Length: 154
Image (cartoon, rainbow, N blue to C red):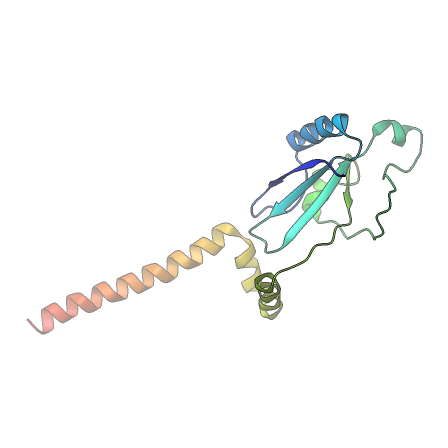
């Protein structure tokens, strides 16, 4: 049995903040196997699971990562996760999950995108800005067309 909690950082990647580490510490006090799961719904299918590093093990020069029956490898962390204390205060667990057909299609579509398109998709402000620009252009075009129609044909 695994106990834990989850939350999201929309558009900011997967990492634990200071508040998140305090919450995780409370969960680990209740259960030795507690995990924190972070999801970024903006960046497609980005999910990660974390556990805290026990400072006493670091002082004793022991490996802080708990070894369990999990078979996996360490994935390359993002710079944002490293800045927020990954591998200093907490570590990432290898996770695997099934994807439904829409998630698979979304990932395939992302592979076809240019780096610029992907950057816009993963940046919520730019993503919304692009849609606003498209809608405003469409609105202005329709308004000008209606005004011209009323002036020319009336």
